[in-house]
Length: 130
Image: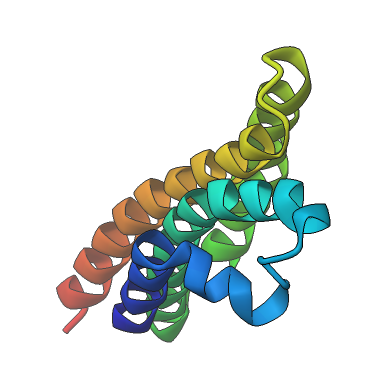
């Protein structure tokens, strides 16, 4: 989760510097691509932070021998909530690529909430058997 936070901070604080590694920013032909990449960096950073947290919690649940719940929660969160919200924000609301990424953020936040609840439940259940 700390690595995800550091990566997210880089995307939030230095998006243009990061884009310059991959794109010749001085060329006028790349101005539109630069604007899109910088705009998406903040949303991608948010996604990376929550996705890293989700991975840690999902694997902690798996370590408690509950493998089905993380799978089902991830499927529901990414495919139904994330993709559904992303397509809606992208096309119906008209936010374009930022809307698609925003929907993915909604999905991963949804996963985090459910996985944290499942972790508490599973930990309590395992602790009661000790």
